[in-house]
Each structure stands twice: as structure tokens, then as C-alpha cells.
Length: 320
Image (cartoon, one colour):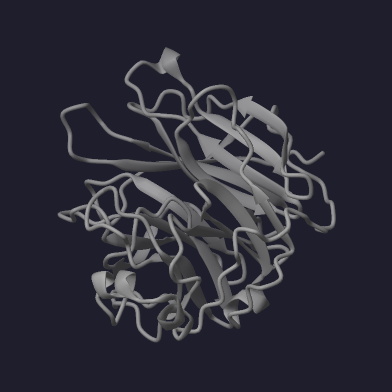
């Protein structure tokens, strides 16, 4: 198990007890301001390209969720629910950027895995992800962030936990600028807080580089499926799975973290021929030549009656 304490015991702890675990919580009242250096952003209206298609992950019966890429050690990590789990036990898959599975870790009572991060430390990859799920079911969501070394086939050990006592918390990492973005529920709505990765690893969360509420994504209700960021731009993915290829409703949105406002939103038809295509997860990675790419994933299946699930990743690479 990821948490040396039981999940229920952790949820019963007082605020003083939570801080005793070394977490410093950013209060919902923190100023919605930012001073993130501006940079080029991906043009979401440009075509998408296939990175890999219809790969089987370690847990063959569950869809991919969040993903992140260690650009130093050239490793891709994808989260998914474990086969046979009630819904909040996750598997972290390790793959090459071509989609070849090279390892995995099981993380119990974690959450849903909508987004994860990764931090290269020498030749090791440290995973950032939600932990201490608030329910042992598909509705379970993380109440803290965990940081641990990826060790193929092992359970997490020497786990550091941060921002305990949160609600619906996840994170993502910017591999270029070495930052951590935290998304969680504050005062009933989703907010983002941006930190340097070094500060986050040291448990310093009191002075975010940016803190803002998630803006409306399109009109009406949307199904949030993932996020990532590069520089001052946050990218989100939303949409649902469907049998009819003509019913594609997957959108990628760009948000300026300095203003908290949407600057571009675009329908994506990447992987449109995948059966029961469902958007899942985002990340940024750099090619060996140093070119950044905005990646987003899609889960699919061979048929409606099949238990098998596949993972596919597409990307955009035009900067403006």
C-alpha cells in the first residue's frame, strides 16, 4: 500500500495532524495572480500526428488515464486502474515513446489517475501522483500528492506526501521549465497552483507562481479528461467515448496561466477511426532534437463486448 496509514485514519486526522506529515496547504484564499514568463504556445488548430496506436498496457481491461514523460531518461509513464480493482487502485506503466511496455508499478488506494507528473533525478524517475483515495471505488479521488521513485515491479517505498487534506487533487509537470502544476477542488470549484519542482519536492507550497480558478471550458457541461502545461500555457482535454465516429466531441483548450483565461479551444479528430475512442490524458515531451510536442491520449477497444482496452497517443508540434 502506498500509505503507511489507513485511508480512513488519514481522513479522520485533524489539521494539526495533517501538517505533522510535512504538508503545507495553499489556502483557497490565495491571490489569483501570476507572474509566469510568457512563451510560445501550441497552435491547437494545426493537424495532429500519431505517436503510437492501439497499444495494450499492463492492465489489459482498463483504459489509460494520465501520462507524463521523463525527458532526461526517455521514459513514458501512463496511469490506469488495476484489473480487478474496485476503482481506486492504480497501475503506473513505463513505456518507450514508441509505446513499448518496459515496466509497471501497482499503487493501492490512490485515486483515478486523471493526471500524473514525473521528475528525473539522475538515472531515476520519480513519480508525482494523487494518493490516499477518499473512496475505495471508481468514485475515489486523491486527497494528497505522493512522490516516489519508480521501481519496476515493486510497491512504492520512501514515499513523500504533500498537500494532505486536499480534495480531488492531481498534478502535472513541465519538463522544460521544471515546474509542478497542482489541480484540486477549493471552495467547491477546481483551481490550479503552480510551483517550481524544486520547491515542491522540498515541501514548499506557500508561494505559488500562479493560482487561478479553472475557467469554463466551452458551453455547458464537459467531461474533463486531462491536462498538462508548458511555460505559461495550460492545456486541457475534454470529451467522452462514443461508438459513432461522427459524434466526436474531444476538445483541446489552451489557457493563459497569467490571466486564467482561455486563449484557444479546438475540436480534435485525432484517432477518429479508433473504436469507442475516448480522450484520456495529456503531457508535453521533447524529441531527441529538443522539439516540444503536445501529446494527448485516447482509449479504445476492439468491440463493445470486449474487455480489452488499448492506448493511443497523438501530438501537435506547431508553436506560435
